[in-house]
View 1 (cartoon, helix red, strand yellow):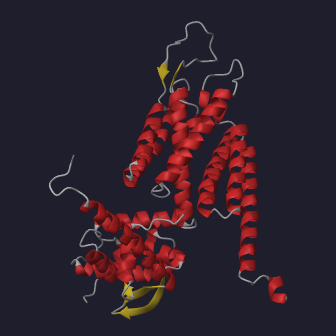
View 2 (cartoon, rainbow over the protein chains, first blue to last red; view 1 turned 120 degrees about the horizontal axis):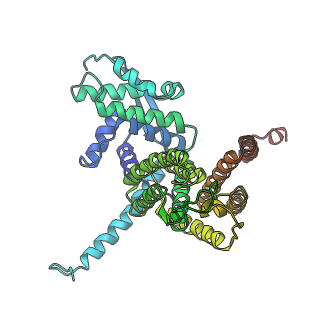
Length: 112
Length: 313
């Protein structure tokens, strides 16, 4: 039995798919990817990053200090890439099925 | 990038334990300051302070417990508590509140509703919300159940005839707090656990004879006894172990969480009967957990080939 991936986790992994990002960039990217539907709180973000790091899905890529502020960049691990690819494939199957069923509906209304 | 005084954020981050701050504190502070700067703030917003406080407290209280274990325990608690709440409402919600210290004459023998019906009703609402997929709303209902359960407990201490027995209210309150450990999203596991638990409790309730002359509080007399809770906890642990042996991990986790919940009820029951016995029971459980963890870690080391014997070979 595989555990279902929740939307914020999926969005975070998607945001990291094209390369490492630091905390605020990740918040912005998740906001952009979800078209403004999901805006992560900093506390939620770091709780999720801590969990994903422990699960081996992400890792710290590097840390920089910019004008006194620490910027920690995180990236997907190979396991994280596989996990995201599996989730994408699973969602694609569901979406394809939804499209197929919608196409079966009568052209006008179809409530009956 | 402008310079913002980071003192208020550092103060807010004190909600987290020092080990967490050492690991994530500076990175989190950097992100908080980046966001504040982008939004033109020079101090944490109210929502940000509350989120940091809540998250910090959660890490302090629950940081030691892995997230899947927390979810499984919350699910098992929600389901078991639902079964107990339904049992209470059906078999003990209405009854004669007889004062056994007084003679039979002149007592009010009319059926009266127990105040315990209020937390039981809230519990049913919370569980229905879980089944509908409204995990967040269910958490609000569980928080209300915990508060009301504690209130009914104190009310029943003032007037023992009015409320349910302490074991019922304490169990409901503890389960409601355990159900708050994590949002319950595993609807199938919750429904299956609730159905099986309710079936076991109803079976036991209907086929167990009440000693004559006992005060009437059905759920306490038949189900929430040391013997029954201890037996059930042991039996469920055996099932969890069997599931683990056949490597059905998800099932083993679900059954193991239910076994943990019944062990907690057993410990509560023992402690309420006699504090020393309860502490001995707790020590025994901790010893078993420590031995189990030791065996598990040794097995894991063996699996990685770093066991001393493996190295010597």
